[in-house]
Amino acid sequence: MNTNSVFSNSQNLYERDFHLWVKTNTQLLKNHRFHEVDWQNLIEELDSMGKREKRELKSRLIVLIEHLLKLKYWETERAANARVWRITAIEQRRQMQLLLEDSPSLETLLPNLFPDCYQKARQDTFQKYQLPENQFPSDPAFDVKEALNSDFLIE
Image: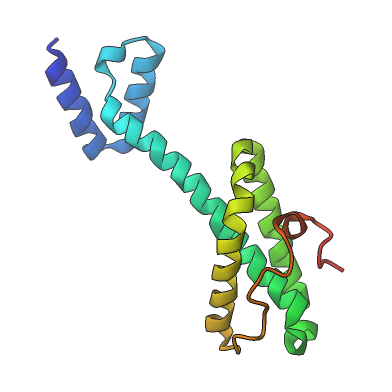
């Protein structure tokens, strides 16, 4: 079979039926038929997978920080909402823990991601609840280790 037609068929398959493309390329790799693998799309998918995990980690960290800020600083609403905020913080920590168990190397990114995630969480909370910008400190009031600590701000 002409390798150009195999490559072309594999690329077309990628566009037509992603699931079948994955199964086909997995089988090609298992059978050591490397010359038939759709390398271009495979490389893009692998790169995308790594970005997706990092994006999920950031998203969960932002939500966690948002709820920790509310628990720590929003006194007027704490009595009425603390339970829901704690539940959300616990769930985000659990999901981050599971993500880090599957991809431990993501943990090394946390110290660098934390300051930006803190600012995004702070800004999101201001916008969602129409709070004054001085409601929460502009510099992080806790660090990433505290944020991930299951006992931090969970009475």
